[in-house]
Image (cartoon, rainbow, N blue to C red; front, top):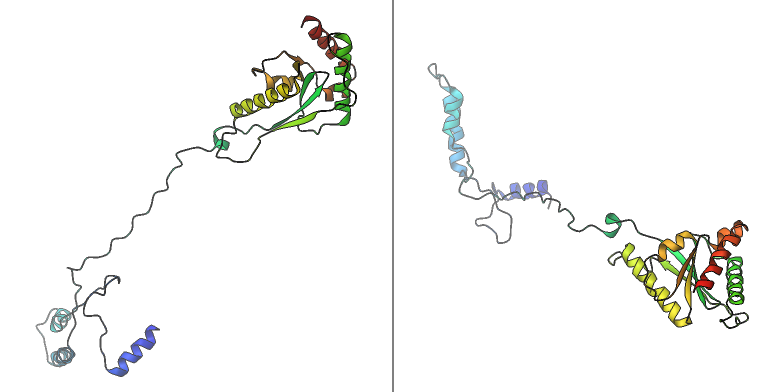
Length: 251
């Protein structure tokens, strides 16, 4: 109810004060004042009027006398006052997230099975092209002609797959360098064992850095240039081919 409307209703009913006699259960603490009876208030006003009409030449403090003539309401000091809630201190995070502790590694490696070897290459954010796959197959066929112990390559056989890191976006799991290293090692070993590859050839220094230290259980060689770099500069093919021939001869 509006306060003005409530006051009008009380005035119409002749109610001078409106207060609960006891503390209501579950309600906020009520400030209780000393109530002045209606008759005593009228008598006090009459006394003030008579005192003001009479001469008082010796009164030095008439205001204090007027205030003492009428009892003033006082707050009940015995009632407890509600305590103000203390401001909550902001809790500092106890555990840092993976993105704050270390930068997230992102890379993609392509895996091509050709000529009995598993060829790996870091895509460097670029898609794998058909020309890159054909170049890898041509190098694999050339290695088989050099190594007479290998069987003839199967015509039209292609096995191209890709490893992407991170494999998921769940920030509650480990997405750091160690987790990426372990996941890549598991991918390469599974691929090598399934296809029964004789070894792993890493094309390019970026891919060589990715597979460095992996326990694959098979021969490994790192070519200095990737297939994308060899397609961009044909002169690089001769250097890569010389290192691949040396691998076959000393194996």
